[in-house]
Image (cartoon, rainbow, N blue to C red; front, side):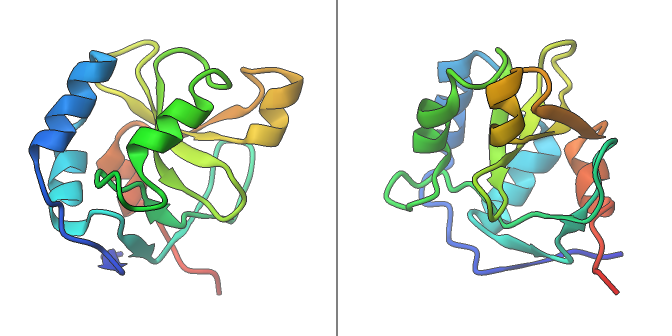
Length: 146
């Protein structure tokens, strides 16, 4: 299914992406960077996804690289970095304070995982569940509820 993006905002400075990568010493996936360039802070349609453990979760929006936006990747990472396992990087929000993240723990080509902040309080690893092998696979797997 093709995905469209609504409510996206122009990426004001592509160097912000490079600065974020340098700050975390990671390389964000090219397919994600292309998406951000075109749909910064966008909301996907369709927007439902499954994890290995849970079904019918809803993706809200890509985190913006513009620090003046409320849901931006800079503030989000700063706010949750101590609650996340190392090398887990949030890039998209849901409606309940959870995040869809890149998982760099085992590879520089990150998988996509879901971080549930409530489950993480019990056990930091318990809050992480697998979604897809890549950003493209994640986006291609989005669907609408019937």
